Length: 324
Ligand SMILES: NC(=O)c1ccc[n+]([C@@H]2O[C@H](COP(=O)([O-])OP(=O)(O)OC[C@H]3O[C@@H](n4cnc5c(N)ncnc54)[C@H](O)[C@@H]3O)[C@@H](O)[C@H]2O)c1
Image (cartoon, rainbow, N blue to C red; front, side, top):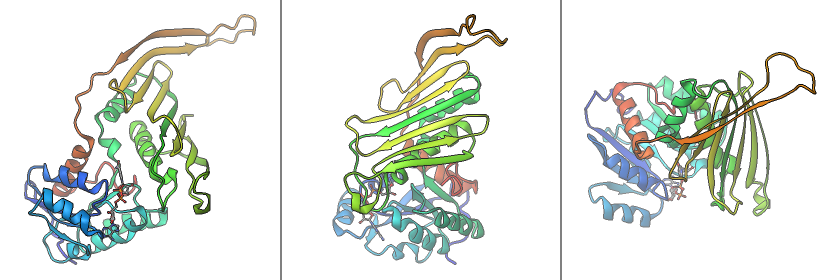
């Protein structure tokens, strides 16, 4: 085993990053901005990505062989931002080398591998965090608080849409690419896991790869709450929107709007006593929408900060392996 001592509170935390494509450099920037954290090493198979990082951060040691990040005691943690089909092997190697691991979503490309990482992290007492960025988003936090405060009343149902003309991935379908965002949001704001899940999808463009580009998911939670997720790489209009309908009020969280969270004082009620069809009158409340004021912080920075906090304090991350 490598570096197995706990990092004490406020002690410097040294991290290494594997994968410097689109997302990895954003992680590098955020970890570099945190107090007491140093990005010491980084790895990518492509030399040009290493060269680009070196221009920004000359002090970071770069290598094409990620195994160099695992040798010795230079690093406390390894951050994995590579394609999904490599997550399992890289995360496993890092945990076995005694490193804490933050792996990008989705944790692995099948649940058995995810479960194995989870038990390895438990066995070696390492923090395992999954990059579910949205649970560190102030707007999602606000939605969670509104729901948990009871302001919406009992939740009836939820609807999430995450569509655009997206980047087709070579190794996973759209559900594995995009639905982790919505699943992490729904389970976080409800503080519960679904009891039933089904999905329907199709591949139209890259048919031979059998990787669905459009997926509809249906979920059932306890207390008769249902949810529908629509994820697509084939849509003309970009949408990132969640509607939550409760007995008392309703809300819409639109991630690409200036007014991210709007609370609607709308609802429908029918008299509690039984009435004949002729007497039946539903009463409607059609109040205004109120924009919730938000103090914005960069979700990815909050996520990186949380990971470092979990390493220092030994607590389990909000988006831990089990959530993954
Ligand atoms: N949390 C979010 O909002 C968010 C956003 C975008 C991407 N992601 C996730 O980040 C991960 C990476 O996505 P991306 O869009 O940056 O992909 P990308 O293809 O742009 O980059 C991946 C990089 O990993 C490198 N790589 C592959 N195997 C490697 C290995 N063995 N050692 C070192 N480097 C290796 C590749 O050369 C490439 O540069 C994915 O899991 C994706 O789902 C998360």
